[in-house]
Amino acid sequence: MVCRVQIRRKAAGMIQLSLKTLPIFSDSTPEQLALIIRNSTIINRSRGEFLFRRGDRVTHFYAICRGAMQMFRETPHGYEATSNILISGDSINADELVACHAEHALNARAVTDCSLLEISISWMRENFNKLGNMASKLLAVLADRLGNAQLEIEHHSTMSAAQIVGCYLQKLWVLYSNDPRGFDLPYTKLLIASRL
Image 1: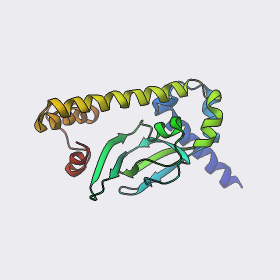
Image 2: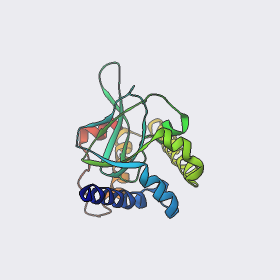
Image 3: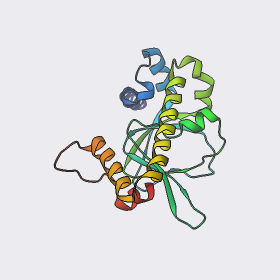
Image 4: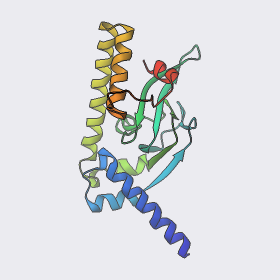
C-alpha cells in the first residue's frame, strides 16, 4: 500500500512539472492544476511508435511534455504527407477536442522518444468551465496553426524550393540552436522533406 501511494505521489509530481511547462496550462490556478492532475496521466512512446492512427476513435487529448511527434496522412499512392512536426509544449489534437471529432483525421507517430500528457476528452469537455481560460488558449493554438498554414501556402506559391527549405531550416535553427556556427537537424532529412 505504501508503495502505491509513493508511486501516485511521484506520478502527480511529474504531471505537475509537465503542466507548468505546457503553454495551455501555464496560468492555471493551483486548484485547476490539482483537478487536472487527478484526471490525467503521463504516457511514453518510443521513437517510431504510433500514438494513434487515422480513423481511430478520439478518446484523449494529448500534449507533448518531451520529444517530437509527426502528424501525417498516407496518400492513396502510399506516401506520407506530413502536416506538422510538433515538439515539447505543443498540444497534439486540440482541433479534435474543440470540433468534437469522433475519429482522428491524422496519424501521430513519435519522431523521438516522447512523454505525453494524456487527458480524457470526455472529461475535458465536461469540465471546461472549471479549467479557467483553457478553452481560449486552445482556440489561440488553433488560430496560430491556421496562420502558419496560410503562411506556408503563400510560401509555396511565391518561393522557390530552395527558399522554402531555407525558411524551414531557419525556423528549426531558432527553435533548437541559435548557434551562428550551425546546428544538427533534430529530425531526418526524409521527414523534413515529407513536411515540405
